Image (cartoon, rainbow, N blue to C red; front, side, top):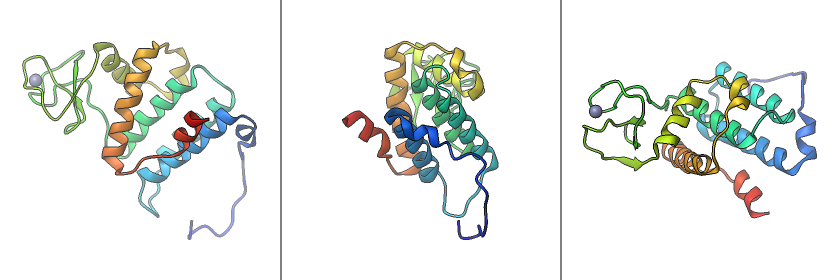
Length: 178
Ligand SMILES: [Zn+2]
């Protein structure tokens, strides 16, 4: 911010403040971006994704939790922690699904390779992570996930965020505590 002398607000997303859920989600997104970047660093691509998710949030497009998960995946990718769901991270063989996610290498492990440095994941959740990582945010509203899958990928993404940035966010905890 120290290099900014003057600015004009194009859209303040004031409406997000009218609802407690969108307010908490909006704060959470800002907090996420804040912990994922170094002071003074800029990313035009990440900014574009953030604004897109704000518009979708304001217009209540689709399931908002799935939208948050999709944004978390994009954020990880744009800050150098993208998930590899197409190739086994150990033997580089092509995979279409996996039931083990390596936290060391940020990707799936095939049935032949030794499972280590990560955690078990259901095939449905792995597929969801893979699908969301290749999908534009504008199209996430079409995706319907079961509550089991949503819970599992939320836990996994929170663990990956903590591991990647070394920090936890507070906004969503506040919302859950209400
Ligand atoms: Zn393998």
